[in-house]
Amino acid sequence: MKILMIGSGGREHALIKKLLESPKCTKLYCAPGNGGISRDAETVNIGVMDKESMVKFAKDNSIDLVFVAPDDPLADGMVDAMQAEGIRAFGPNAKAAVIEASKVFSKNLMKKYGIPTAKYEVFDDANKAIEYIKSENTTPVVVKADGLALGKGVIIAQTIDEAVNAVKSIMEDKQFGDSGNNIVVEEFLTGPEVSVLAFTDGKCVKPMVSSKDHKRAYDNDEGLNTGGMGTISPNPYYTDEIATECMETIFKPTIAAMNAEGRPFKGCLYFGLMITPNGPKVIEYNARFGDPEAQVVLPRLKTDLVDICEAVIDEKLSDLNIEWYDGAAACVVMASGGYPVTYKKGIEMFGMDGNGQVDGAVVYHAGTKYENGKFYTNGGRVLGVTSTAPTLDEALSKAYAAVDKIKFDGAHFRTDIGRTK
Ligand code: AMP
Ligand code: GLY
View 1 (cartoon, helix red, strand yellow):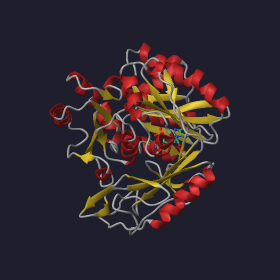
View 2 (cartoon, rainbow, N blue to C red; view 1 turned 135 degrees about the horizontal axis):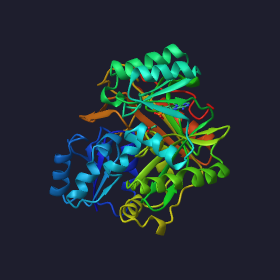
View 3 (cartoon, protein in one colour; view 1 turned 135 degrees about the vertical axis):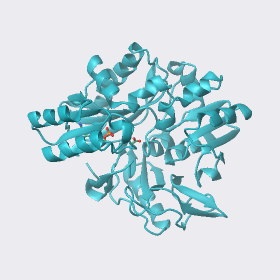
View 4 (cartoon, rainbow, N blue to C red; view 1 turned 180 degrees about the horizontal axis):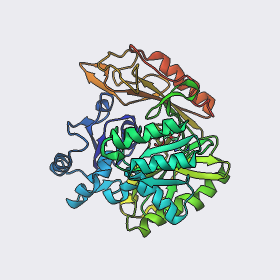
């Protein structure tokens, strides 16, 4: 099969390495890809939002399967565009991807179908939102832009003033553009966070092994929120008992709710959960694999990923037994100095072999480019250095030992992945 991966991050590199394990995959393209991906797949210079060129490429090259990995092209109908031309594509259509693209949609969905989540109100008017925040007078309070905002549209306000400023910058100053035309103001929840990715064909749902992200830039969960600075799998807080509860109260009801709304979801559905003192609740849904969750979940997948993609597309997922390796995986993200605010690109990297790899780990490239046999930084999150081992401690030591071998000016990584609450 000829397969086209759409995207350019560490998640896409992890998907590509897993697809290469399949005997069914004879040719792999990635658009646009990155430096590390170019060592594993043929990279194609088409932007992820360019539906017309992407469909043309898929047709011209007789692509058998397109995998749409990032949120923006999913929300924009990349899967719909492929399907309209008879091309098989993995991922939700635009109608289903709205579960991530609109927080107002997802919150209303959960309320309507009784899926546990934080209490909230929706506003399309800044003054009404501010009035509500002042009258409730509880802190912390969470203010969220409705639409996609590169993972930055959530503000946890510690004071009423901070919340009022958040509302103003989102709704009046349009900090996130039209993503902030509507906002959600919601109750602050506490408890450990768990990421559960699940394959679903719209009929049945098969959760993958659990994981835990580390979203803050610095050790001890300090600094700004990022796209994710590291992950571990499994998540120690996600017990079998909690998994069973989530299946009955969250996973199955979400699939049923999307069907009832006429928006059957097919692809990978990401449940961002918080294990609160009142039980597990949904913090957010994503319509895709998480990044860097994919980097620790996929190495543990034993079943052929191509078979899974086909079963999802053909709505035959219930016939497939999905198997996982025991043990653990840890991913440490190496970022550019200054990320997530401002950072330089084009810095030469040292310590990796010609394929951008080091012993003891698999290096998933996120923001790199490859020129004349050398790797250079090309983004905020640069690498996801990932190891698997029988125990989490061993996986972490291996990953950190590999991180120590890689050098570039300004390199920043957290030293406490897998060690925080
Ligand atoms: P989101 O983009 O919705 O995942 O939010 C980003 C992060 O903000 C989450 O991973 C949580 O750590 C935090 N967060 C979001 N909503 C809440 C909430 N209601 N209570 C506490 N923390 C939250
Ligand atoms: N790591 C969180 C996300 O992919 O949204």
